[in-house]
Amino acid sequence: MNRKLQRLKRKLAWFFGIYLRGAHIATVDTKNGLLSFYNKDRTLGRSLSVEREFEFGGMHACVKLLVDNKHIVEPEKGTVMDVGGYIGMIGIGFLTAKLFNKALMFEPNPDSFKLIERNIKQNNMTDQIQAFNLGLSNEESELIMELSHKNYGDHRIRKEGAVDAGYYNEDKRQTIQVRATTLDNFVTENPAIDFDNVKMIWMDIQGHEGNFFEGATGFIKKHKNVPVAMEFWPYGLLRAGVPQDLFCSRVKDLFTNFYILDEADNKLHAIDEIDGYFKTFSLTPSGGCHLILVNT
Image (cartoon, rainbow, N blue to C red; front, side):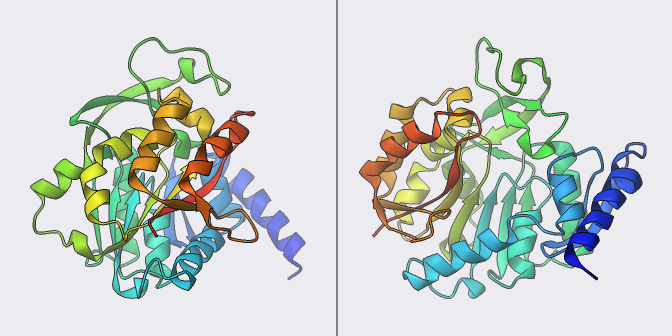
């Protein structure tokens, strides 16, 4: 079938057969795996339904870049840590593609976590994936999570204090309480987990990354060979209460270099260049990139 026609049919099937129906859990077979999601998710749910994948090419490109440049060795025998798992499409996707052998997933939203558990089971990965209904932050606490009505992958941890109006009307979002701890505390409290086999951290936590780094300092300094691939979104970082100087100082303390996965030349940048990219991507609310932080 012509690809354009096939995509049109999927868009119509998504809109009329999934989205417009009453609230329910939809299931679609994708490149990332057999995935169930809430049908009212108009962003990631739509992408999985229409494109039949989410960031699958970027996941492959990320691992290839790190292997080619000798930042990781034999990832297919190792573990990927998926921070901000949503419904599990990244962690499950890495294992489906056989890029990694095991995964550790962290997701604080209880509704999303139920789908992670469902998706792990229906992809027969219960022996390969350990999932935890927790956020990873800078302290052990109860945090406020604001819920997007459109993009369920954009549920975010809200900073303490007054909430300003935002570009995405964040101040009007419904909120829930979620549990969080630090990665350093989690490692100490779970000695049975083989953290030395972690080959890469993949993180997408909608601006909370600065808080994650503060709470993961011990782990990252002990495991300098573990790269961190993250969504770099200055607007989200600023909304989370982490200004440019604070975020940049934290990553400079932990890493020596970075790649921008979206750049065609895969240039290795000195970590001191991060301030310029923060400033550039701050110009618009949607500005950002896929950042890979490494130590050389």
